[in-house]
Length: 565
Image (tube, rainbow, N blue to C red; front, side):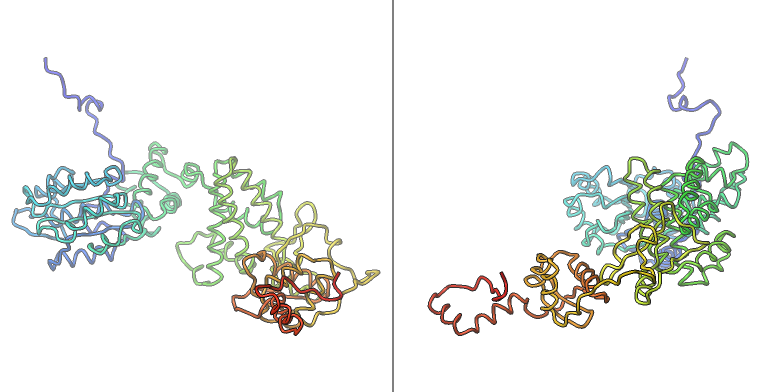
């Protein structure tokens, strides 16, 4: 009795091994490569004209076809045609012995190496030992090295000489996702091809065709979600599509099913959430967030959706013709355009910065949902703030600053929010009832302001008078004045001056004089410090000169006025 081979026992009898979609529908010709028109055109012309390089460098993000392209080049260079008499061709026949062997990864003259697992110099030496020998049966001996950036420095150095002057029968094809980690000495010896991310529309068409061939019914909305989640990678998208078809178990693959599978928030709910946040409706926004979380949406993904929405609205404001894109969903085309028209560019920019900072916090937080809730609360309160330009204009006109909004005003719990001018920049936010910060027309007493200083020295004296000795010392010893005008100070601080010195100076002068002061830092050299000027003036005094001459090597430690204690 003969025992069956062990390979047969790995599968049920009569069953065929299932191949995932990413492998089953891997391109077999250059024409099937989608989104890589420039690469296909260049390689086709080079092979047709016989201008074959000895080294190729393929770079791009994962899943765009680097390894597939390398194998296609190997087939194109070694194809002999169905009759066995053909030469290199951009359209391999797929039926000759070489095409079949390369497609099945069993050709002895096409050597494929994964540099991620074989990174050392010994691995490269072992590979290069066979370079001097002619191919066994093919036209060219081809070395395909995947993730070549993982090679060690010594391995790269061992490869250089052979790569620069290889035998005529040898071709090198490298693939990498980190082109910056490949030494320039290697790059200069190869023809470089950058494979582009595949457009979402092209991916959606590809997935629709494959779904049809697989006999699966997939909604257009579901295909759009898969293409969006693929992020330009055909392999990633096919893996997601494979999972979605398996989940449907022979039924129609719906958009909601794919959304639940990927943990995505409903697009309309993302608009609802953003509208609530920008209207200052904290409670409603938190309720919407909780509903989406309960439905299976990831908090981090929700923030990413909000970031994408803010980015899209910003682009619509600078390029309105983008709203006419027929690929846009109805929600974006109508509701999104209306929301973008009500929000100014500074407001969208502020929302972008807060979401971007919040995204990193949510990714690092032990409980992402709580981190996202805090981001929502911050944004809702910040929505109550006027833009810096509006706040400054309101302060100059003596009128309360109005806040931007995309709906009727809705104050967050705990009172409104108002920006307080800090020198020349709106740098601080105080959350307090409106009546506590906005002076009324019926104030009993007017604040007493100090006279406007006319020189930089007078500014230092004012700080001394206001018992800000530390600030006065910094201004006297650590800054070089560049420009001084009524309400404007520009200076160049040294490394010992605090970074917020300009803001503090502008804030205090504005507070003391009742007029707006702008203090800013510039890179111009500027004058000597006030302390240095005093020293120079002291050195010119005849009495001081005589003392210095009488005591060689003596220096002036400081200068004090007669009226100083």
